[in-house]
Image (cartoon, rainbow, N blue to C red; front, side):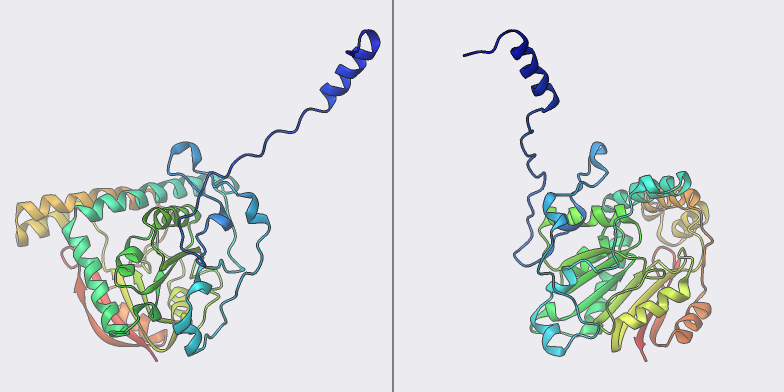
Amino acid sequence: MPLTGPDAAASRARASRCPRPSAPRPSRCASTSPPGVWCGSSWCGTISLTCSALTPTRSPSSRHRTGRSRLPSRPTAAGRASSVAPYFDPPSNEAFHPVSGLGLRQGLEHLVAVGYGLSYDAIVSSFPPYRELLDEVAGYAERSVGRRRDPRSAHVLDVASGIGTLAFRLAREGYTIVGLDGVEYLVEIAREKRRARNVANVAFHRIDIGGDEVPWREAFDFAVSLHTLYWHPRPAQVLAATRRALRPGGHALFLNYSRPARVLPTFKTILASEGWGPALGALRWLLPTALFEGCRNYTPHYTEADALYQLLADAGFEILEARRTFLADISCLAWVRRT
């Protein structure tokens, strides 16, 4: 029997104070990762590359993670060959750092970094010199790890991996790739690309190799640092951390700019040596790079060949091969071995 009068009014008042519980919201991400491989969505949430979803959202399952394995500080030979899953588990020192917690200047630098990172795919796909550089790095990786029956047993570290351009190129060779970068949103974009492409042998972690502790020691067969030393505030620490991450006798490849990528001088050099076509094509890389460098707040560490080789020797590397490369020889390359 329906309530009337004062009883009905009291009932309505109680209902207004106790609203009905809302239905649970469905998860916005369905992971495409293979079984046993951490995809990143259960740890840092998911990210959509639309402007409305640049802030990662955590799924309910991210609060209750159980049964996580840990990578030993020095994995055994059997462990290195039998399983790569530990690389896909987030290290204990990896944390989420939202842009909202940064100052205005740092926030703008993050946005510029993300914009430049997103443009890299378009640059690489239509810029032959950069594709050739990535193939060149892949060649050194093969020389470093040798031909193996199971290429996944070769563990490769990508230092300052950005949105994963180089990591995905090396993943085509079948290696197990770990990419580290200190910019959270670049790492999130790399993880989103990994999920979209369903690449099972790559993992990305938010770790600044020159400032944060790298949890893996003597674990990698090959490491590559592609134009990292010139912008990092602590290049000596980057080299030291990279060496610690390599197994004894492991190889590394370091590329560093020997001079700024100034648009007009580089354009003229390429025009004189290769003609109008390559010179005009180089602008596709030179212009966004110049814009990006102009927006960054850093002290560059450009190194001529002799200075780079001395840095590497001081860090405990034996130089096996060294030369100039990339876009009018703007970069110095050094292939080294951990001593």
